[in-house]
Amino acid sequence: MKCPNCSSMSSKVTDSRPTDENRSIRRRRECMECGCRFTTYERIEQTPLMVVKKNEDRESFDRNKLLNGIIKACEKRPVPLEKMENMVDRIENKLNNLNEKEVSSSLLGEYVMEELKNLDEVAYVRFASVYRQFKDVNSFMDELKNMLGEK
Image (cartoon, rainbow, N blue to C red):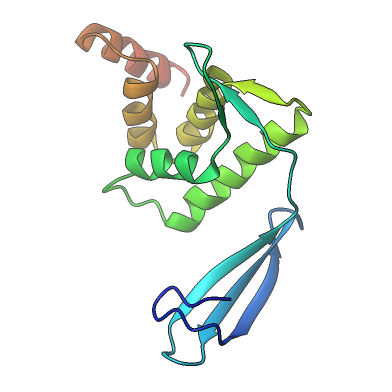
């Protein structure tokens, strides 16, 4: 595995464990050249999943794009990256369990909202404000009232 720090092809596995309900393997590696430690994942390759956007455009599901959106929502919040990665794993599993070749971006957004609501309420509201395209403060307040009413 190529080191992300020095590009050496010489590394050793220091830890290996199953993750994601035994659907992937997480490996901690150490570069033999520079000593950099990094994490790799081995997963079963799934059938490509297409996301149908609101304007009917289609694009391949991209777990990194999903993770980056969640990271943005959780910015400056006490949410460890590992929890965000686990959230992406759960969402990806839900999508794969649908056994569909295409999913709507709105379904994907609902899955993210459901997960964020359980993880961090501030991140949930941040994501909701973009996802639901709040037009004004009243729509923002309505979402807060809904969230608080469910407690």
